[in-house]
Length: 296
Image (cartoon, rainbow, N blue to C red; front, side, top):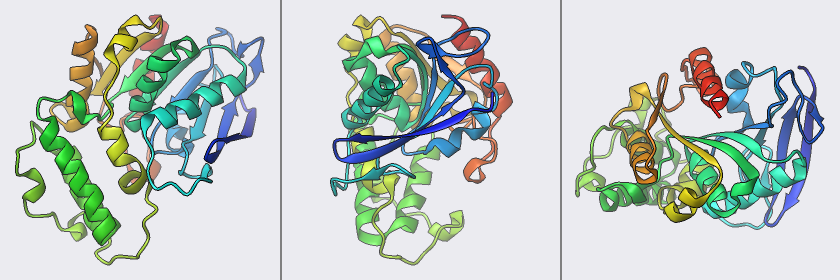
């Protein structure tokens, strides 16, 4: 399946760009199985991050997109931050613009949070949502400490730039177990130890540290709406992620929904095959995703 169509969609406050890999036919994605369109959603990761995973689904139509403020999707409203509900509305508009009916969606990280917000508001648009490691602190027993740590990262970014803030972010996301009350007050990690710049370049347009971190981690899932939704919900975490922030969040969400946590191979970026210099297990990851979707 070699067809590629890139569409431009004007939405309130942004110009979105999304890619259709394969042919849209008969209200659904083309292919031998005539499965619904499969959307691969990240945040703030752009479409390019799904290159390896998408390569394992050439038998069906796949849609990827750049979230607002990321890659090719430019913000037009001048806003410095956004929230999952706004991303969810963007996803709603993309799905409606496709005109292919309800989609199956694999959503990872912030994309998983946005996917949960979409299903809570417009469940009829998503047939199955696989929410992989949604990092919302609101569901954690140590949520106050986790939110304070995320706020500290954002403030560090505004004050000192990308290097110091990203070093704190890496430390936060790789730590295991609950966060302590003094987590944000502990000695800051050295950016150089992670190969990050130590000098402030003056830019404040990072979509993770500036635009998304507070809205994403501060999102409260609407569990009543999610339980009532006709959408099949699968909440997942990587095998190697156990005890980490996003995996703990996934486990709590699954528990609140009364469903088992589905374990995927590898880690938070287990679907990556060298994108952004990160290596997961994309082939095994794709096999698990295919099995999960086929169980519908």
